[in-house]
Image 1: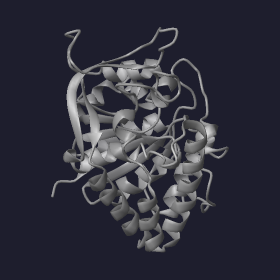
Image 2 (image 1 turned 135 degrees about the vertical axis):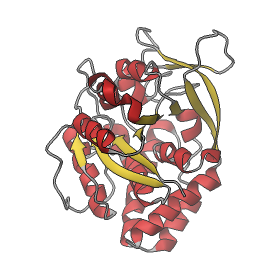
Image 3 (image 1 turned 180 degrees about the vertical axis):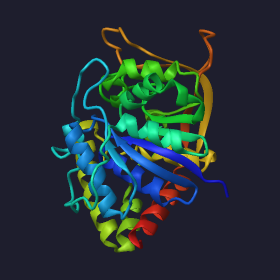
Length: 312
């Protein structure tokens, strides 16, 4: 079985935490390291969350703190969804190892440079670090297999009517990634809103009875509460692990190869991903966009990883 080496760039975040667990405990993925970016919370908070998730799930990979602001210097935390800590809902253990003494972008460069195989970059937060890597390490781009990112939408947004949060946080970085020429897979709201944490999922977690599953239940209950309050979705969507799942088994989604552009100037649409599903504009196709999810297959992967992590 071939194993896919990845670097995970994230902003934990409830769904990022689950993406970390899926990446670390699925045998088809080799998690080389984690870089952090501000998004769901301030950079110091999401970085501590990454370390604490690693402690909780007994994961030992290098973690480095990345950019705390967008390419243009903006920052905003999604406290209405993820709480003041960016990972409210459970008491997580203290970190068991220290941060790398380098930036997140430097860690991405190091891991890509030192890998004997091409590395897949998976981004589940704003694309700031990924864009900086592409600009600062052009000589390493040939050792990148592809970029998979959770972000965007082919329909509506969740930060503004048409912009999804991760893309809205740094549209300029998204533009760099979309124009990189690398193979791209976009897992936007269309597909991630099908990865719902249902009562049946809570039942599976409760049946595990591990310390890890109990902590995850606390996190997911908080996540469910805020999603219901803000978006009237009592079953919250577990966005970020979908970007890992498509690497494990491409058949977990139905996708279409299309042109995707990021709106940079629109008064009401800045940060929107313009997905040309029907090729109306005839522009060069640059991204595979996931549109439909095999939810049972996705949850089988996710719950198997939680079971494995709980037994580690």
